[in-house]
Image (cartoon, rainbow, N blue to C red; front, side, top):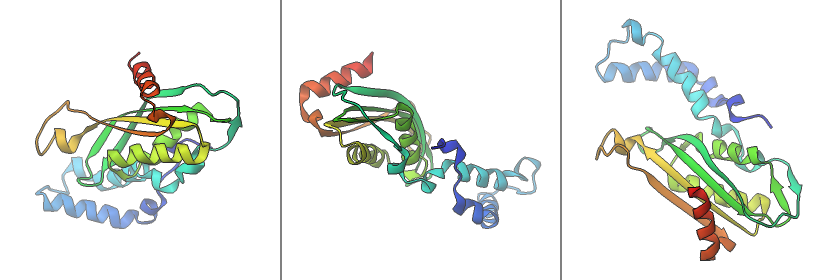
Length: 196
């Protein structure tokens, strides 16, 4: 399956003219001169950006895991530091960070790149960090049926750093635990390995 960069949000493509019109109107409403040289192409640029950053709506995240492989490995598998970019559904401001996924297979494994694609499919849409964390864990559990899954998501939210309380550098950390990761020793092993 192709990477998310190969997808565009077709609803944005179909509605390009309307979106460009509305972006231009917003620019006017905030006091800008839309005929200014630097803004002439901004509505088109914003629309092209929306095609890309909202590409997750074009993909069923469950299908992104694709083909699984029969493998009798029943020890911890971790893919950490998967960088993501998303848009807060409350302010439409960017947030970004890293996702760490650990699971203990029960006869089926996914290709490691598929976990990164799963993160892309879930994050390239209007989101909240808590939902991203839960969705990744639930999809892993549903598709791979592992003994357990743990997902940790770190995020820096511009809606909190650049506006509102204005606390740049602050990070939000969320986690989801499924199956055998309810065991505190296994959870500790996962978190220790994340720090290495």
